Length: 279
Image 1 (cartoon, one colour):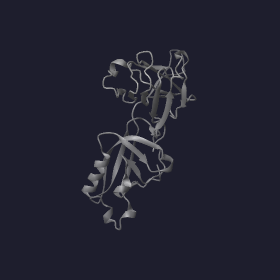
Image 2 (cartoon, rainbow, N blue to C red):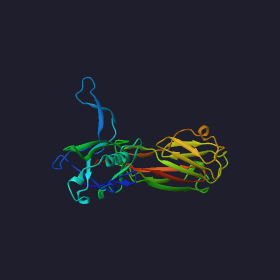
Image 3 (cartoon, rainbow, N blue to C red):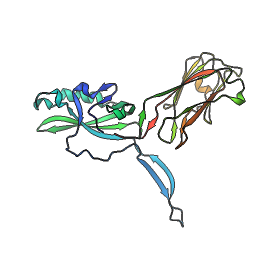
Image 4 (cartoon, rainbow, N blue to C red):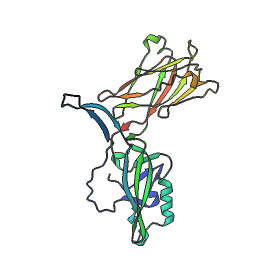
């Protein structure tokens, strides 16, 4: 990481007259995690010298440790480099939270990358004074995210007049890791059709069904939280949903995802693509 500033929960470190620094005098060359700390489990069949890959998984979320101090360009003496108890408290109140918030490094190549993070903090003391803080960032996942991607789709009665030949929309997944991403969706029902308002939504080969939809009803799906809700207070959507949440797929060389619906509706799909990188 080559940066002097960062943003956390829409507030910048520089607003506290602080910068990212290093107190250990290291040369600047160091190995760091880059979001690919995968644990592989291998087994060797009896009578064979070849080990087979049995499973793989991330065993822990991403974390990184760095230090901060007063910006020497904002002070006129060594004495003013020391941090007061109130300043330390203000910094730790901002950073050491009980819920995840967006963390971004102020560096050109990281402009569109963030982590959802919390921090722990240790004071760095010199000659009885606190000269900085050592921060350890803990993310909510093993990897970082790109800025939110939004896709909008419209299905009208012409698209869906023949349920055996639904018009599929397609988009490219921008995730840079193989696997699945559960997006957020907002579905505005335009016509409840002739099947008692039953909506079937396909994202690739995964079928999500919601019964009892009404014209102009707004259905919201929170993919990561696995939550569905509706603007219609009379619709018992928990009873009418099959709880198969749509998911975006990403293979090593396959990026294309296909979406279709059998009711006239507008769909807004949002997600944060995964990116494998570290600080």
